[in-house]
Length: 374
Ligand code: SF4
Ligand code: SF4
Image 1 (cartoon, rainbow, N blue to C red):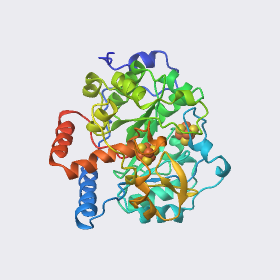
Image 2: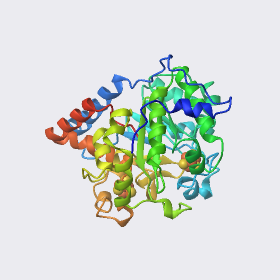
Image 3: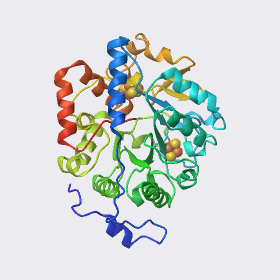
Image 4: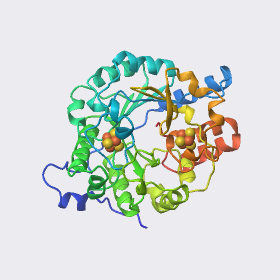
């Protein structure tokens, strides 16, 4: 599998219609990860672990103000799991209280499609005012409209859901034309000075060559980074065959995360998580790092799996809860390799072992990857 040497956008543009944004390599629009994010994350973990002596604490609050969406992707568990409450939304106060209760310095706004949440501009404005780093995950369909109401900030990044180049992505999201709209919005966002990342979930049938093209394209467009994750086998998923077992995921990731690809592409995930996905490292999940607040309360135990919901975020840090979850402990965790469970495990591990810290630092300096946020 070879990562394209020249940017693939030229070929893409030749077959594109006029609505597609034109790639102009002479224009530098590279989004950059703020240094403040790294030192604030470090300070937060240090304070929680060594000063407050907490064994379990959050790093990223996953906030889902609504579960409704304007798409119907094959791999989506959320819009099916929350079907009876798709009309419900959190109030702005509920969102801000959840962020306060969690206390994490980073908030990932997801859903559902957060740009459909009427108070998203006010929510982002308030979080930015509090200097909380916000990653807003979107399929991009309403992003152009949203950019008119939300100014760029170093505390805000749009995370664009892209599961492949045009054909593959439009199949994954079950609607033609979505890729072009998302790419156009991404281009405009970069040109307007927003931080922009991409987020790709791998399933059975993910095509390594197609993903290499996508990753090279967004790297060349100036995206701040490419986030990848394994899909979780949601019981509510409509096409169960698309979910991969742990062994199958590792095989697919070995084809996608080649050394060549890691050198060429600006990954946002931390480099040891990429090694984990390739089956070269083992970690136990630390999903309490990403408490997830929804219209039904905090998901317990984690972002992909909700055996119940709770009103108290502190329930998610209780040792007794984690006696029942994790790989090798609970069958529902057997195939899980999601970044919300394992990327943080690598970061926490680096704080416990000088050798792990050195490995992480070496990987981050040697590769172009960093520390993912969600
Ligand atoms: S865009 Fe996201 S929330 Fe909407 S259906 Fe697809 S995966 Fe689900
Ligand atoms: S391993 Fe289990 S507890 Fe951990 S993130 Fe995955 S599903 Fe959740």
